[in-house]
Length: 444
Image 1 (cartoon, rainbow, N blue to C red):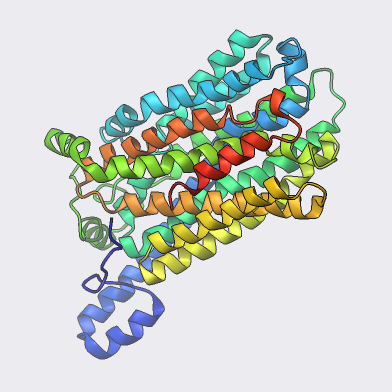
Image 2 (image 1 turned 60 degrees about the vertical axis):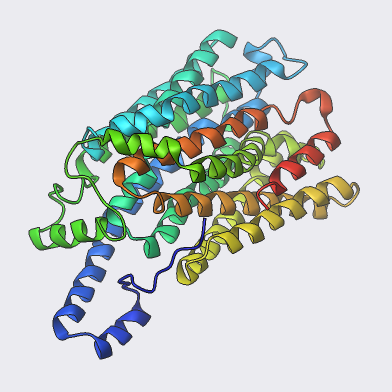
């Protein structure tokens, strides 16, 4: 897939406005200014809601890693000496998530975006909260399975939703803000888990953790229903003139649908597009690394000699740095309209992290630095590839099919990643780290 050619596109950043004032008529300059005001208005409403939704979505899917250190295997899995039961609880989420992504995203076009996003948030929030009530392997598996179903209706739908309001030149940074909250969730989740670790309650700490991180998603889902804008042509958040500009932007260099419709011919075109399958293979390797680091970073940090409580706390800085790197790379890729080069660079950063863990055994400072490289490289590359595909598949219906297709293929890597760190391989995990390095460097 070649980098986007933006010479003929209308752009609205400050530098371009100066050029426009010299080269365009007054009417067109005024339209550029109106468009810039529109984008700011959209940012102020869409980004906070979407980012907070993803924060709690990612907290609810990845808090198992923290719950593991708070005694979940001992309490409901009989100790789980091999670690296999925990691995299956972690990976069952991805089975339902993978199976439901394509149908859920296509069906989402038939409903108002605010109602769809709100219902998915309420659904996964309830599922996460119910994990606190599990007293065995089966109930925990069921709760995680339904968690995957509801999150499948949210994750791929957001890039599609963003593409209705933002152009290619704006998409990378907005996707970085959104996906960056996965890294923020890792940092925030570590802080919450550290606090919960010191709570003296009548129930197990990991149950408290699931309740604290599940209920806010339900409340946020209710707020989403009232405040998230609907499609550009129908939202009451915009004025009539703003809706006209938004619809023109939606159809710029692509074609948007009008109303709640699905173009069946474009669904078939998506299944015939080879780029989706290539992107899926790349995404497979990235998600393998992401799922493994999300679920097992606290466990990896205990191999550096930290206690369980301190390991929870020490997960915060790597995720915070990952969010900063993701934003800087995405901003630069938007400015240069080049995704591939930045993806290659971020993959190399992650590969360096795995090499350090493989080759440095005594210096814990260097090994801790390696976790910064792994999280930064992994999160940045995934944020870039989602932005790359979100605006390069053609019509709206084809994007509604193609985006979840490549994400579903890639999420198969999450199933593998959730089994990458079996208890039997600890504490060194040498073979596992070598496999993770190979998988992480595959996109290059």
